[in-house]
Amino acid sequence: MAFDLDEAIGAGRVGFFTDTSVCIGCKACEVACKEWNAVPDDGLTFTGMSYDNTVSLGADTWRHVAFIEQRRPLGHQEPGLDGQDFRWLMASDVCKHCTHAACLDVCPTGSLFRTEYGTVVVQEDVCNGCGYCVPACPFGVIGKREREHGGTAAKCTMCYDRLGAGEEPACAKTCPTDSIQFGDLEELRERAERRLEQVRAAGVTSAQLYGHDTGDGVGGMGAFFLLLDEPEVYGLPPDPVVTTRDLPSMWRHTATAALALLAGVAAAAWLRRPDTTAPLRRRRKA
Image: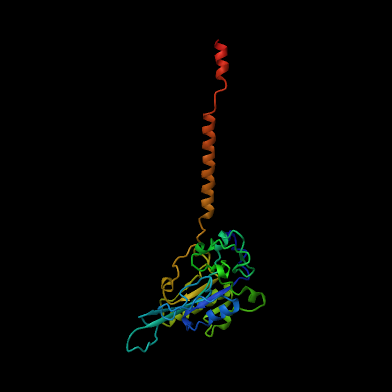
């Protein structure tokens, strides 16, 4: 199970650090991701939600840039809107490549696997389209494609093919502000802590790291973020927990209950067995 992978993926693990404080909402990461990975069009419909036309992650949206409008100041910046406080939060969301990945636990075919880089990848040619991984993900990252596109599960692979060639993922390569940073996960965590201090010193006291803590409910994320507000504002769960956390204890309780049931059935059968000595006792009396 995924709970046993901490040591196996410790050394040489790579990941993303997304610094939302410098995201400009250009969506270059979305375009680069689609172009490199041949991700199908996801509709590009008008949602009425600011400039957000993708809404959320899914089988055909592996990078999602959120636009969040707030009537409050951003640190010491002047919004220039006739004295109105205003800020625009932008963030590029992606699969978290969790340390404790529930999608790995529930996949019956081995389509989902942990790579040598510590990332989690879907093998679409192995996926049977069961969809178990979709509700298992606590972040709503994975989705199933329409039947005409194969009907299989799909999500960010952190450009597994590019990593094998010594290249960084397409989204990080194309990001013009280095909001999306790729590299050794431990080094990125140290960099994120330093960046958090800088942002808070600039007056954004609400800034925080999300997915940085290896002691959280998913064992730390392979893709973590510097946020300027609470996770809920960005549509992220505030305290994510791997959805298969209780599976081992559930199986133990199920096995105990099954053994108790079998013992009860055996005892009942023993007590209700026929008395084969009765005819012998009657003959002796006669």
